[in-house]
Length: 456
Image (cartoon, rainbow, N blue to C red; front, side):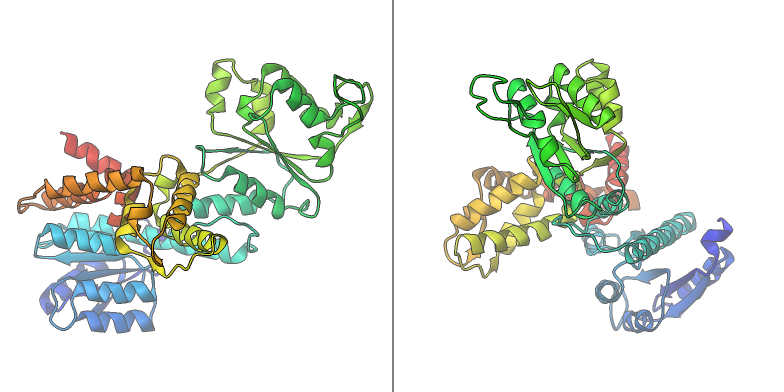
């Protein structure tokens, strides 16, 4: 182990078996770390309340307070403290329960010391990364944003917004339809030095090319039939502020040439006019297309692509940010209940489980529409699955049918325990790998690697 990963690290070892606890502490100290001991779950909870540790290695079966209960209490005090659960009882239920609660890893006795060492290394890395992110978040001014999300992908995006917003950089915002690219553009403007100037939006896919040109650049009186007066375009309207070009990938080749000139020269000509108009505008653009692939197919100008892509921000799809679904559901439910003058006392657990398990191909926009429909059709004062769209209800029905038709035998190895736990959780989430990874307390990449191993 590298010295920087050893320095100052303390592992709390929790086991009511004194001999086993002593053996583990001796081994961990040989690896270069300090150790502390607790002989029961309640003792461990008290210790975590008094002192900071970098990782906890805890047995499940203990006399006064078991490892699951101790973990729940420790997690409430220090959510980012990685806890590794160990047990001599290899059951799928224990494995699923530990990982669902958020345990960092799960080991069976007798312990494989190489696997224990790797688990501790990962736990320490996790703790140090979390501490670094927390420090960066505390040092960065709070963002003025309507974006909702605490999942790691959204925290990374918000961190990038915080870095990029104060600059004058042109930003290309990418992501699937319905992920919230416009909210990112608004956050970039609201946290920039241009926040008191106009924020102007144009949907490039909503207008024919001739209308789009006039919309962007304006036109002179008499430029075309119906042009009875001069009209300033969006570029001039956004002067001093920010212009958001949504669906930039839908523009024609001719329009791309004109946009490139404005970006290069910061000047334009109105349709039907000869005078040059200077503008001071920051450009933000968004697309759900792969513009790099569009460039390769000669469907998008390479020079414009590089002009737009000074900084690229990618908004993650909802299926990769399962931790945020509950937050979004509660936010939308409260908003639409107030808007539609409905009394909302809560959301049933069955309804929330269905919402958490659904893969959301339409992303946040689909979730928002589903909750609005549910609130409007709600009978009583609780949101239930019966008022959700049929697509969600049918998905939940299929998931339950799979659960009722599946069975699992008693595993004979740690590999089998882990496999059964992962496959069972995948069934429960309807095949939603991101949500399954969230429930199991592992990364999506780790889950995919494990599933590849099962294919053989």
